[in-house]
Structures are given as structure tokens and as C-alpha cells.
Amino acid sequence: MRIPILGLATALAVGLAIPIWPAWASPPSDTSLTTLIAQALATNPRLKAAEARAAAAQGDVMQAGVLPNPQVSLQTENLAGSGPYRGTRAMETTIGLNQLVELGGKRGSRQAVATAAGNRARLDADIVRLDLVRDVRVAHAALLAATARRAIVEEQRGLAAETARAVAARVRSGHDSAIQEDRAATDLRQAEIEAARAVRDETAARRSLELLVGCPVPPLDPAALSDLGAALPVAAGGNTPDVARWRAEVGRTRAAIAVERARAVPDVTVGAGVRRFNDGRDTALVLGVTIPIPAFDTNRGGIHRAYQESTEAEMELDRATRDQDTALAIARDRVAVARTEAETLAGQVVPGAEQAAAATREGYRQGKFPYLDVLDAQRTLLATRLTLVAAYQDYHQSRADLDRLTGAEEAQP
Image 1: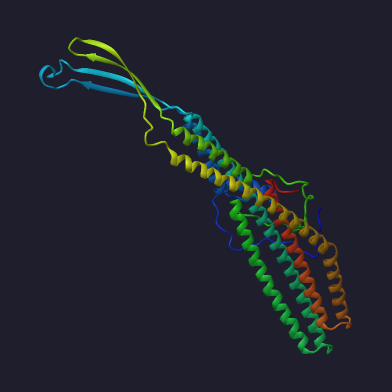
Image 2: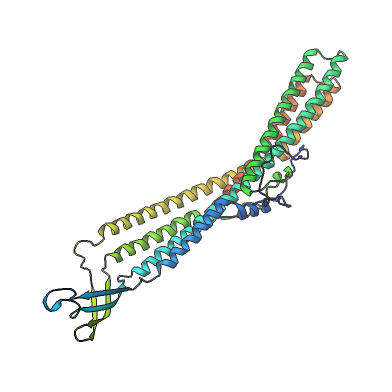
């Protein structure tokens, strides 16, 4: 649904202090919100870092399933002794190959932990992506609102100049006192100050958006601010990345418990080799098994820590679920209130203020109203227009927050 911003002039480009960007960061030819979001997703370093962390986690998944390396051993006995063991005649040389055999499901548990950690890292990247989309949408709405406010105050400055000229003419003709002319001049200077401030605010808003998208942003059409888009979705998503991230963490900590319990099970090292006897030039096969005795270390501390970390993750999941439900209810109410406020202002309040201001100015020129009535009507009109712009901005920001909570990346049409 598109509601026109009544009385807004066409926005002009603000070419003040444009930051110097790399040669590749050229402005997009399409300045729609969808294009700006795509530009941000393609270039933003915050998202690139999160995606790199997710990709790095896949290395842990690959490494978790790797078997321990075998070991080659060389052992020499009966060398350089006394009596019959002098020299090397009685020397025995054994060359063996040893392999650690993991027991207790250690390898499978490691793989489960690494897989769960990889899922969590991907969800973390999804959260960063959603945050970035939300930030771009909020910054885009802020820039549209700043452009609209600048257009409004510039139009108000023009009205103040026109009124000042009319007052000056009436003063010269003797219909008004010089005090009215001073008031009109003061009002004009105030309008010029507000216009200069609006230009600075628009420049700051543009820079904020440019930092997110990674390139200069051309002038935007403030009329897009009045597009309230489609109605709210019937139901919000209950498995958003914020909640799913903690659900993956719960899975990781539970798998970590299995890892710590498996570490309490001793591993077995098996070996086989060949022994050569120098005195008779004979050889023999050697077999060996090494089994640690868990007399002191049963990894009780590691198991205890794993259980407590799992409890912590479960509590965090419960907290995230509750926070999500509360935040969704608040966000949906904010969007509904902001939409109603914007529609009421655009459909009733602003048109009434515009009609009253126009009638008052015309009546003043005809001598029916004093200048104070004109000044009051113009200030009322300015306030209602700025309130409408603020309502539009609040709606778009609230909608961006709601879509962020529900896990919606795309800009709403």
C-alpha cells in the first residue's frame, strides 16, 4: 500500500563530503532496497568474517573423523654389555608397528561434537546476515526520512520567505506594524537554520548507509518512505536462527558429554614387529598390547564440566525462546501501531493542516487574519508533516525489527 507524502518536494542530491571509496565500489545503478541489501551481503566484512568462521568449522568436522596415526618403533637390546654381551654379537633388534585403537566411541563422539559446532557456526553466520539486512533496512529508512525532512523544511523555508515578503509589503502599505516584519524575518532565519540542519542530517544518514553497503549511495526518492508494504504475516517463525543457534549448542554440549565419558575408557595400543638375533642370524615375530589402568584418572572432572555446560546451554535455550516470544509480541504491536498512526496522519491530519495553512495565508493576504495566525498555521503544518515522516520511519524500522525476529531476510514489498 502506498500513501503519498503530502507536500514533499522532489529531493536533490547532497554532494557534501562524499567519502573516497575503492575503485571497485561503484554506486549501484539500481537504488532499490533489494539492490542495496544484495550489495551489502556481497561486500560487508562482518558477514564475510562470519562465513569464514562457519567454513573453518567444517575443518573440525573433517579432522574429527581422522584415525590416529600408526607409530614405527625401533628397539635394540643386549648391546655393548659385559661378558657374552660385549659388542654386537648378542644384540637383538626389533622393528615394530604400533597402532592406537580408540575405544568407548571416542571417534564418533568427536564427530558429533564437530558437526554440532559446525551447525552452530552456520547459524551464527545466518544471525549476522539477518542483522545486516535489518541494519540496511533501518539505515535506508533513516536516509529516506532524512531526505523527506530536508524537503519539508526547504519547502517551509520557501513559505517563510514568501510570507516575509508579503508582510514587508503590508508594512510598507501601512496595514501592519514593523514588529510583524521583524517576526517574519526571525521566522525566516529559523527556517534557514532548520534547513541547514536537515542537510547535515541527510549527509550523516547517507554515510551510515554507505558504510553498510560498501559503496556510495545515489540520491533516493523519499516517496518510497510512504510505501507501507504488505500486511503482517499471520504467524511468526518459531525456529529462528537465534533460537536454533542455542538448540544446536545444546546438541553440541550433549555430544561433548559423550566425548568426556568416552575419555574415561582406556584406549588400547596394539603392535607387531620383527626381532633379529645377531648371534644366530635368526628372526622372530613380536606381538604386543598396551592397556592403561584407570587407577587414578577417570576423567570425572571433565564429565562434570560437560554436564554443567549442557545445563547452561539448555537454560540459554529456554531464555532465548522466551525472549523471542516476548520480542515478537512487542514488535508486532509496534508495527501495527506505527502503521495505523502513519495512515491516520497521511489521510486526515496532514491534509487538514495543509488546508488550514493555505486558507490562513490567503486570508492574511486579504487582511482577514493577523500574522500570528499565519505563523501558527505554518508551524502546525510543519509539525504534522515531520510527524508523518517520523511515523513512516518508525513503521519501517519496526517492520525491519519484526522481520529480523521472524528470520525474514528479504525486504518486504
